[in-house]
Length: 249
Image (cartoon, rainbow, N blue to C red; front, side, top):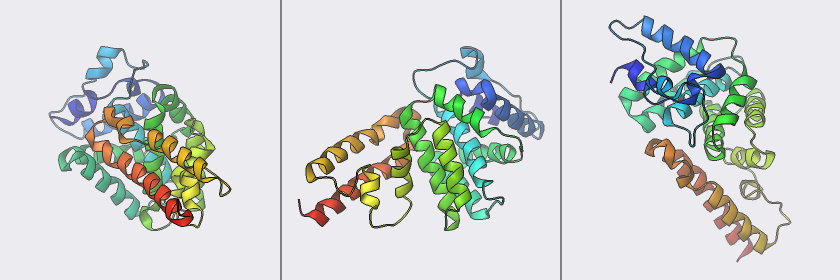
């Protein structure tokens, strides 16, 4: 499949709005450098572009992820090769080498753009993307930030800002953030409860979080995104098991 058909066939609402402008510019640069390829907005033509959908399509999630990843990588004023490698490796693991190469080619063009509005991009995502997929975006962004061995204050601040614009609650943000830090109270943060919670409250919180982070919540994004969802789900299970052992229930 050609590059333009790969991206065009899988995208719906992100062909419109501020995200559409960003990927349009990036795609134009990519296609201009490729002989014999033609830009084809297949799904965008059928849906009329920026329309609400029942569920986020894989292509919409991908381009949203690429744009937000670019914003986070630039947050500390420098681009570490380990962060770029993390993005590439994640795409290889999710999509396979050929599709990952196409996605990373687009990512590099997006990364060259200097005037991306975080707020406008996130508000479009918030309007069009369901909550479970937005949680998955935040989880991935923390993985990028930690890829160079440490999450800087600038990166944390940027992801926090993104989470706010995406309509992610403070508790959900802290839960995902705790999955990337080691501290004595991580298990409580992941389950979104206080240390004063009773055993029954811990059990109730576990059931709630297991439901919220269940991999089936993002099954519509394709099997390639199941691994990230499974990672979050396992963290919830481990947090619960830790508290079970600590409290002896």
